[in-house]
Amino acid sequence: MSTPAVEIEGLRLVYPDGTTALDGVDFKVEKGSSVCIAGPNGAGKSTLLLCIGGLLKYDGVIRVAGARSDAGHSRGRDPSVFGLVFQDPDDQLFCTTVRDDAAFGPRNLRLPAAEVEERVCEALRAVDLAGFEERPPHHLSVGEKKKAAIASVLACRPSIIALDEPWAGLDARACRAVTGILERFTGTRLVVTQDPRQAAGICERMVIIDGGRIAADGPFHELSADRNLLERHGLDFG
Ligand SMILES: Nc1ncnc2c1ncn2[C@@H]1O[C@H](COP(=O)(O)OP(=O)(O)OP(=O)(O)O)[C@@H](O)[C@H]1O
Ligand SMILES: [Mg+2]
Image 1 (tube, rainbow, N blue to C red):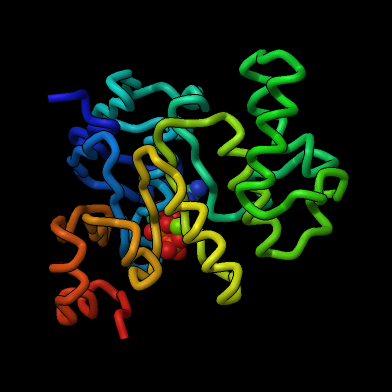
Image 2 (image 1 turned 180 degrees about the vertical axis):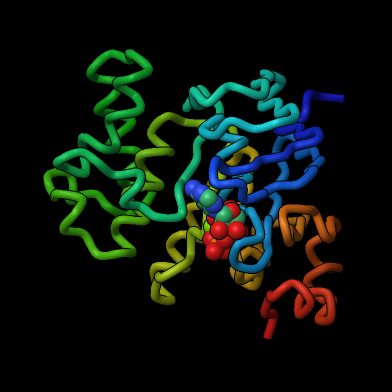
């Protein structure tokens, strides 16, 4: 069997103010699979992605593509392996142009300039932002910012992508655009959402997190058909 894309054992995260955000989370994500991580506000979903991304110090073990990052690390993952799209695009976009934000990752990977340019073009085309190269990210609409944030992650060509609420705040057309981007991505996908309907065509598995623990884990079609379960965990499948 191949190495899982993500393995999490005994994950616990207590923020400095004493808030326990994750309280014993264990699960594995098989390479090439697509998992929807759902749960109510404050469940610990964003915290979970930040831990997998190596951006918070936690207790427990997380391996991404076999590479372990122990408790005490908070250095971030190799962006060519694990790409994380934050819940708020303003946390992701910090350059003066869309081009520079998309180029930031590839430049950090020390790729030659021509390859950086090729990846920037490819990533901006993938999210339908060709022509936005010189625009300042802080002047973009919410949906455009989301797409620019996704492009900045895609430009590193990660094998695993994790997106935190990729459809939040988007209109129907932008939602379809984001869904299309996710459908075309061929690697492992972790998609955090409070609206599992959006993930229906993409994810084969659903993990429900509530109160910092896994409340359910199973085939997407089974869990998404269990209205009582969804309702218990603040999720809508109307
Ligand atoms: N920096 C922080 N310091 C202290 N507590 C925090 C911090 N960030 C998050 N929390 C708390 O940790 C818990 C989990 O938060 P988290 O943001 O992971 O939830 P979430 O499932 O992503 O929620 P949402 O659906 O609202 O995005 C919440 O109780 C939250 O108040
Ligand atoms: Mg969140």
